[in-house]
Length: 166
Ligand SMILES: [Cu+2]
Image (cartoon, rainbow, N blue to C red; front, side, top):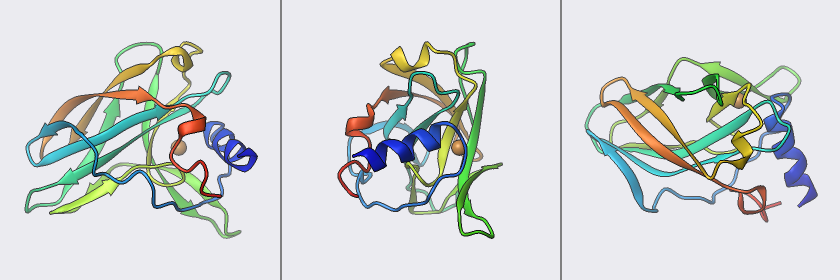
């Protein structure tokens, strides 16, 4: 449990993050939103008191015959001034680091799961109000499917994706 806590704090503080994989949180849950061929499942965010950054996750399925891309996410309001799409890359020292990307690809007839330690939506320079929110609305823009506003529910660390897997 302690290890999970340290990993998540590291993620929130936006520094070095040791990659780990986990097979939980599959995208078979309730579909929250559909736009064109894109289906959004299990949108949630994790935000800690005192942390400058937080992160949002979801599963995206593409039922169409063409690839699509998540090209941006945005929040209306001062609580989250900056939102970026991030992935993890392994540096020369073998350490996984977060890196901003212009788009996250969702292949035709495929899916993409954003989850801790992998691709995610980074909520940056957030105010201390965010950890008290039970849900937030983010507007996602897909290259082909267009714009959709999705409600992300807060998940506590204790019930976060990979707790219990270490
Ligand atoms: Cu990040």
